[in-house]
Image (cartoon, rainbow over all chains, first blue to last red; front, side, top):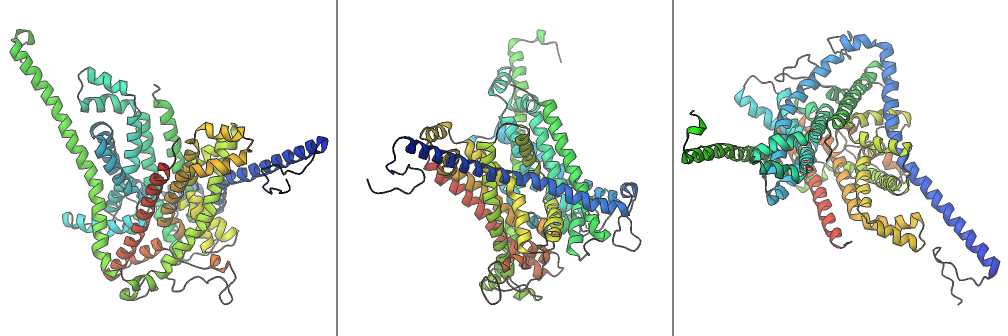
Length: 321
Length: 312
């Protein structure tokens, strides 16, 4: 055997004998172990990228916000009723932007939660297998469409449509942006809720049917309560999508700060304000530049609060089978 | 109503039937309501496509793809936008795919069950819920100003890579988890090291699931607007990034070039009052949607095709 196979995985047939051969094998084994440990280190570093991302997000937001709050006291930030950070007479009342976020989210949720829940019940308890296999992916396309296109749709289709019914509606308004946002969120609510309902054991359904319940009674009195923790977390996901949604609002809701909960008016939200500032040309390090980080921190805390609420709800209402 | 006991058996059963009928009626009502709710979503989708197709289709000429944006709507095109999108996606893929797959392999195959692994897991779940605009702020503070990458293709690509990282990780982990334990045991029994098990068996067998996750992640990234606006991508770009090795440009010069992407071009055209630009926006939206849906379709097809070849 003179041919030497050069793959590192096969022991090279060098004619070693006795101790020399054992030593050679031990050396190769150690080398293999070293290589594996090295690779594990590289993989660990990759896994840490996501941790660093979170740390970096928190660091950047807090660093710029601290600089911001050294100019603007936290109390004014929370209680001022005007938001005019780029004017000479600057006011920084985050409540104005929060009003926009709340009203747009409420409109969106008023669409997404009822429709999403009904669709989930329908798909899980009423629809046949074939209908579900066809309709569910089609519905999920809704969440795959880029949000900028929804913004375009809200501004150029939905707003004119509503203006036919209610002619006083301004071109930019929270209502049509919220409606379109709600439709976009439907799949988030319906998919997760449906998964939760389908996870309810068959025996509960069979029990209900055996007692003479109709489909509707089974769905509303047995399945929905049993799947409540999953449905609640679907709602929470929907809420945090609505709160964090940016482009639909930036395009269709106007970007004027407006302290109102009336969806028939234009308003700026926390997210669309960030877009508005980013579109302009603010010098790095100015108070105006820092406001978007303070707004971002507010947004981050809001979504964090909803995530924690969702976690708590799942814990509290989990049904174990 | 009379006392049920005083009713004759025939009357009783007639009454029972009426009750059952009235209860069953709700089943039918709900069936209709459910279909109506579904159709709200589906009709929106149809209306969205119809509107884009009607407004945008006449603009979809070859010149539309080979022209730069212009002040005159009729001559404007999406050349710089699609080239920008392509290059940003390239950077995103180059970063997100290896890092995502590596993290998933670490968490699924290497990690011991301890508090540190728990932190990584909780963290990935949370990152998936962070609004995309917050990633934009991260990029603005970190990539643009701290690292000094500027408002470049590199900054945008890295931002979107971080954004889709959770998607890639979750998909890869699911793919790895679906591989039966016996594959690993067989490979170990033949003397493979952990890495050999991963690279020679788990990654190839998990490929359908991994690819699906990667493509779905990229299709999400290509439509993201908010984070890219936040880092300050310009909307009016009438030039292309420098080609590598052409003229003065080095191999990586294009990474630091200003750029625009399709969603930003759409945003720009949408926010102009002139309806002629809205037609451009519709046409560009059509291109973007077809790209996104095409990628999703490719992912579904790949999963289907590659899964057929693997039978456990």
